[in-house]
Image 1: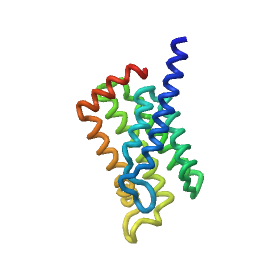
Image 2: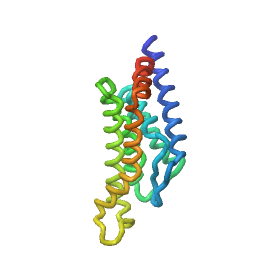
Image 3: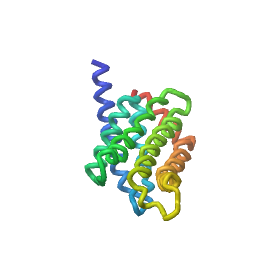
Image 4: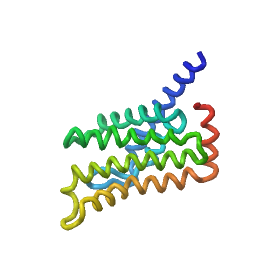
Length: 179
């Protein structure tokens, strides 16, 4: 019975965190012309699913975030582009759970999850958005710089914030309640 209550609690926690991630994703500090922007810690809210509930639940929850983002703001060029930009990219944030029981697990897990999201968006940029690269600019470099200008910037800001001692201690103290 206890395991069932814990699973129900984790399901509810993931639902709240994904709803929070979706809402925070709508609060953009700045927006780029071809899509993407620095949000108010939306990737952190998603990564917390994996950190608090483990990689498998985090992956499922973050995949659901990708589905939710696709429903709320769809942009379709090709089915593979949709998979890369929505389902795989957001799902990768759940990889944060792979490091949840290690020292600095939230920071390391967050970086791994964001790197997964970056790789998916980077590949999508090369394959589907090459036409936006300035004339004469290498498409790979363009996609890297474009994706880094919002995913990388938000990640750097978030890593700084989650390593402020009071913030770090708060996330660590909440973890046993979620497990």
